[in-house]
Every structure is written in C-alpha cells, then in structure tokens.
Length: 555
Image (tube, rainbow, N blue to C red; front, top):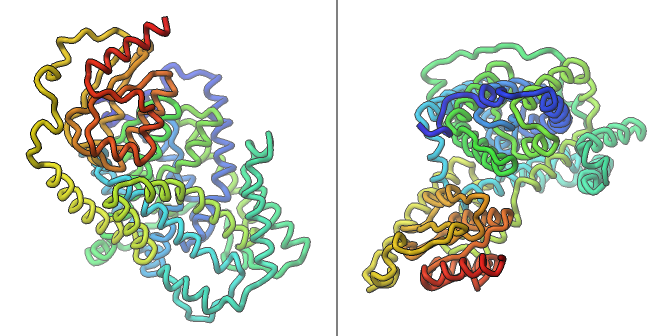
C-alpha cells in the first residue's frame, strides 16, 4: 500500500519528534486562524439560511474532528462558501432535520470513499468543471446578499429559494433601498478591500474583524436604522447540543441526492485544499484518511447543530503562513472558537447585516477565480470553453448537481470525439523512425533527468505530471513527448505547475518532440513562451545535447 493511502491520521505521524518550539508556533497559528474564522463562520452560516451559532458550531466540531483524524498536516476545516447555496436550499425545503439527514448521509459516503481508497477518483472531474461551478457558486452568493447589502424589504410571502427568484425579488423591490444600510455596507466593503494593503497590522489582524467593529460602531453611534443579526436571529452562547432527527426510509430517500452532492463537493474542496497545502509546505497528504476525517467531521457537525464542512483553502493558507505545521494548530483553532462562543457570542447580535453581506462579497470575489475563468476562455480549446461556460451558467440558473452532471456528460462526449479524431492512421505523425526508439542506449549526464510521456494527456491523466521529480543535483529536466497526441486545458494547467516547480528549483525544462496539437495548445496558453522556445527540441538527441551544453557552460 502506498504511503499516501494509509488510513492513519497525520497527527499520529507528526507527533514523533514534536517539540516545544513547534507547539508555540502551532498555538499562535491556531489563535490567528480562529480570529479569521470567527466572522467568516457567522457570515457563511447566515448565507446558508441558518443562525450564526450554527456556523461557530461547525467550525468548532468539524474543525476539531477533521484536524484530529485528518490526512493533512495543516488542513483547517469549517463552513465554506461552496456549501452556502446548497444548504440554504435544503433548509428552505426540509428544515434543519432535512439538513442533518443529508449531512449524515454525506458523512457516511465520505467515510466509505476513504475506506475504499476512492480519493484518487476526484481527478476525473475536469479543471474546467471545478472552475465553472466555483465561479457559479460565487455569483449565487453575491446575488443572495444583495438584499441585506442594500437593506431591501420584501413583502410577506416572497419566495427566494432559487437564484433566479432572488434576482426577481431584488428587481421588484429595489425601490425599498435603505440608504443607511448601503452606506454601512460600502464602508465595510472598502475596509475589506483596503485593509490587506495596510503594512504590518493588516497582515496580522483580519480585515473582516475590523469591518465588523467599524460596522457596529457606525450603527450604534450614528443611531442608524439598519438591521443587525440580533434583529433577525436569537443569539445564544450555549454549547452545541446533540440532536438526532427521526431517520426513516422516506426521509433518507428524500435527502439522498442532497447527501451525494454534499459528499462530492466536500471531497473536491478538501482534497484541493490538501494539494495546495502540500505545495506550500513540501508535504504529502493522505487522501483516503482525509476523506474519512471529512466524513467523521460532517457527521459530528450535523448531530451537534452544525452545517456541512470541508477544508477551507484560505484558512489553511493562513495557518501555514503563520507557522502552523501540525494538526495541533487546527485543534487549537477549534478550542479558541469554543471559548469565543461561551464568552463573546452575545455580542454577535450587534453585527449589521450589510457588514455580513460585504464580508460575503469578498469571500465570493476571492473564490470566483475570474482571472482563471477569463484565461481559460481566451486560451483553452473550444470544447473546454463550452464545458466551462455551461457549467457556470447551470450552477447559477439551476444548481450544482445539474451543473456537474451535465458538465461531466458533455466532457465525456467531447473527449471521446477528440480521441476518435486523433486515432487515425497518419504515417509516422507521432513517432520518429527506429533511431529514436530507445533512451537506454544513450549517454545521459548525471545532472539531467529524462521522462517520457505516452498517450493523450487529459483531465484523467494530467495528475501524473505531479509524479515527476528531480534530485538536488538535477540541473536540467527533459520531457520526451513523442507519444503525446493531445493535451487539454487540465493537462496544460498541470504542465504549467511543473514549469513553476522547475523555475523555483532553478531546473531548466527541455521538451523533446512535441507534436502539433500539444504545441498549439501550449502556444495558445502562453506556456511555450514561459518555457522558452529555445527549450523545444525536435529530437531526443538534440535535447540531451542542449542539456549537456547547459552544464558545460555553467562549469
């Protein structure tokens, strides 16, 4: 069994050799992440159609359990924006009991996925689909917060479950705009935008906390007529309480599809967060154990009053940047939030709703990846652009389930067509004559590593590029691509990540025998210029000679 597939929590592994110095760093990082997570957890809970306590419960319980049992050294878990619209829809239709059942189903599925070592199957969801639905979720969050940001008032009985219904409600009731609410929202939004640029202080104290404090002071001192959390919700500092809803076959059947959606999204988000974290700390997560931990965390969260949770990329990155290197940081973050719940939770009633809306606007902006979206629209093959746009539109207009299902279906059909187009007899188009058939007979200098890629590189195989490695003495990396007939956008993205790794380690990357379609895809994306046109060789012998010349020149 591969090390990455062990069902052993990372906590048990990293504690060997653990010292007081790292403990201090982990505790400090956990406290800072808790400060960041506090306003976000409240805001995301409200966006999910539940009370503010549910957001804190989720960060405490799921955050603790996922750090305790997780497969990552540094993962921070809690409520995330990706779940907001899904949870809001479930709560609106079936109440909290329906959400608990759906989340427990999701937790059980996640545990099953981990036990069956299915974490690697996540790679079969293309980059274009994840980019499309992430951008779509961001748009739905923004639309859902327009009411509070502008201080609008809706007539009794107005139904605003679906995104389109929310847009119609905003349009029909925009005349009820509250100028004071808009002012509070704009000030808080300005703080969130500017605060990260404030030197020293801005890097330690989250802008969301400053926005909350300023928003409270504006409403209180100015005696402004703006809705606060306390006007709409009953605030309590009581501890999470165990609640088991009535499970029945009909209830399980009704919520099964929602449970599948939550499980898939939790798996994607958590494993993506783990991959990002691995790159930041040069570590390797255990995907199967992480899925089991996500399942345990979601079941625990649901049964103790929380909502679905997953790995939060931004909070995980903040943990790493502040010195967190073991699960102790995530556990500390959960304990600090528990203390905040007991001592400070009643003061959450003072937070203005436009401030919450402004925080969620920034969350949506940070998660939308619009630059990536635009870049793909400009550079990706037309079939990938089609999948990207359709997934985005379906996420906004319908929901995530429809978007992923249709996106995968279209991707599969287009991929089959693409491969069938390439599988035609074109004499020696992709392979040279026999004098290029074997690398074993060639003299490869010690400082040069040679990899050969065979077969089409698409979303199901692009992750293999991550297995390419180099030693401390490696100066040049040669990628032999004579057997690669095609690349898609996901493969180009993975290849770009390899280029960045090479640049970071000062390793020169040289590509040998790049065929027509892969070269066109790389040129369109700008990767050819990033690698350097001089580093593209027609023959493996030319590539080895170029790599050898680099060493001779360096010496």
